[in-house]
Image 1 (cartoon, one colour):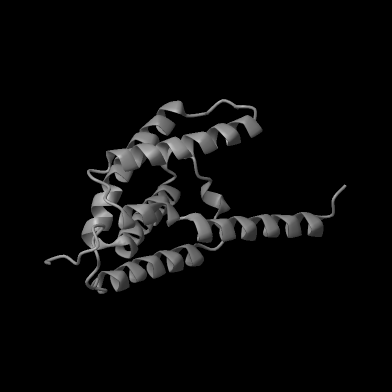
Image 2 (spheres, rainbow, N blue to C red; image 1 turned 90 degrees about the horizontal axis):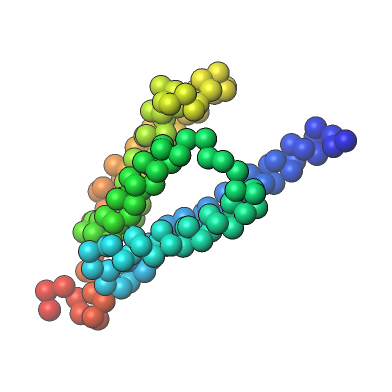
Length: 167
């Protein structure tokens, strides 16, 4: 049997490995929306959904396509997520990628905190949170970073045609 120290070390390695992947990959899917003309966002959203579906098929196959416990909630969440994706190119072109992603992340964290505090849907074990102060500190830092991002004004940028706006 595996010792508790070895199990904890492997858990830490897995955790930090997934954090490294998240740091490199999250947000990189929006770079084409900033570099190329995206139109109304429907094609962008379709391509993102197709990519995510292909990855989910592979992950589902790894877990033998186990039954989803709340299919209605999953479909509702997917629908809301897709509506958010349709807005991504519009938001990125209007307020910039940094502020757009900060707004997206801050909203996700606020909703996650709300769900965790209220036990929304019975999906969260209220007794599992050992240090609530860290939860609130992270929330305050996230909202503070959002306020800081709002103060940054984008400079002149080239459009996909190679011209600066107003030329």
